[in-house]
Image (cartoon, rainbow, N blue to C red; front, side, top):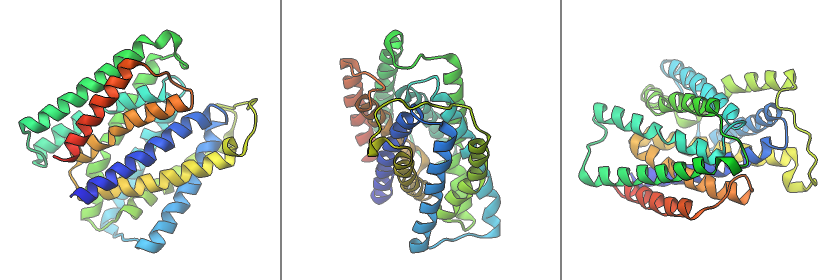
Length: 292
């Protein structure tokens, strides 16, 4: 099990860097064009990984693969729209609420037994997230993005879409699909949609007036994010297939704190002592869950 949890840790690292970089990229370039190119890169990356690891699928698994692709696309659309109204760190905080839905379902399905230790680690994590969120809300007047209710609603939509993914992934795997097939199902649905938006046009157009460097160019950012996304999806899907959704989901919440640190680095958020305390408590809780 530890190997599967390590893959979840690595997935979280790749996802956090990808999301923070995407937040930076869409502040400079057209979001639809950026997402289409990075998704194309990520889809090609999935095929290349599958060429080495193999690709397994059956007809019985295809409905679950297709359903997973549609739900992940809807969740991603909500996420992209939320970026316009909400700081990326706060988005990640709200998304962490999906952990409770996953925990409830796993208890019902018998995947998880609530022990005092597990409840203590979960409670510590909840406290850390609450502390982080309260401090973020207090800083709204001086934040780089103005927090609007529609942004929170969109993030909740992302949570509801993503929440179902681990269970659909398990159903697809039980019917003969591997992680590459599951992910390719998403790109088969997403790429035509993103291509249409990219060609359509003017929404979210950006005029990049900052100094151009090789590391902040459109295609360099798109390729970096695409490669990170490809690695993230493979590792996350692999983890969900082989381990308990609640455990993987809890480990994934480490991204809340990583994204904040990266957003500070990219100058899209501010550091405070309260957030530092929340980081320490949250990482402690995640390590506790990792070792559970």
